[in-house]
Length: 391
Ligand SMILES: C[S@@+](CC[C@H](N)C(=O)[O-])C[C@H]1O[C@@H](n2cnc3c(N)ncnc32)[C@H](O)[C@@H]1O
Image (cartoon, rainbow, N blue to C red; front, top):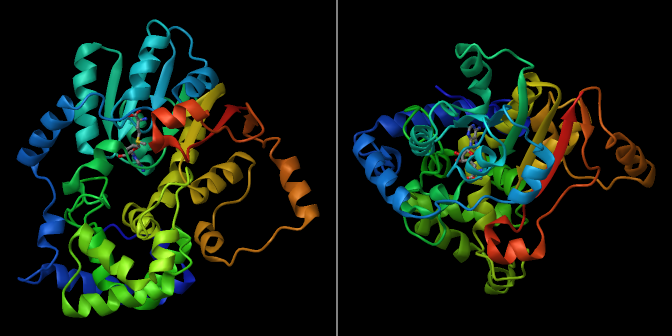
């Protein structure tokens, strides 16, 4: 069974984890499994239907900060580039067109994205090599292809979900379209992997609140966790809209209506809850850390790395990785109470942003999208790009 490090090694969740997974297993195997709809996910027929509808949407995902990525990757003719997050292939297509005879290794954990990469490989014979797997599986995938560590010229990691995943109700990420509460980026690849419905229906109240605080940075985590536990006593929570209304109902209207996104547009009150669940279901922070380590191992000296993230938990992790901090106890960092840094600590931090034994930053400060780009592609509004050179 895939046993998520974020739950297993966290002191606040460790106690509940064994009981949780036992409860989850028996609940899941019960004849009347309430998440049957959520966990059944797309099989191969559904996936081919999904793929054909994705193919008719043009483009399925608009690449974020494309200009900036091409600038910092500075790809030259004949180079080998690793796109660790192929998604809809927007970045890969631009990379293929930026210089002649470039080859792209195109990784994604989502089988639908990899099917798109296979289509692209047919259009560019010998230049696109699709790889199905997670960041944490990359080392093995590259070694199976006889690709030596330290041989890749450039790596792009565009973290998070694609529009194809977010916008399709049946994937269960969407707040606005009703679907099974699924959220697994891997689709049906790992049958033992819990989906979002499994998490909300089996974790105890304290564990739920911890997850919402740590991964959603949700100030009302305890109220929401209590409402979830109350609601699931009556009926298991198996649909996205069902969860969204439980969350909305748990908070006073003044809080619900006051939520704004970074463009100051009204934001759904359950956005942070959905973010937290997505991170847990897909083990996103541990995966990001594994991805950064895999990129470090794959790149040659002088090779370039671009990482795009979409929320502060991810960006902090990338920033700390590039400056050489010890991230071996990731969970303790995420679950420890935030403290204000002193001026001296801030100054020491800034000094360390100058790089590490392995990385030279290509720009010291984080890079954000230009205003016009955000108007054109609002999904990129919270994107942050960090670019570095491998020492
Ligand atoms: C933001 S999208 C990438 C969009 C892409 N750059 C484009 O231009 O279309 C992120 C993609 O990364 C994939 N992904 C996220 N985490 C991953 C992981 N740990 N391992 C492999 N792929 C991952 C997701 O499945 C998704 O397709």
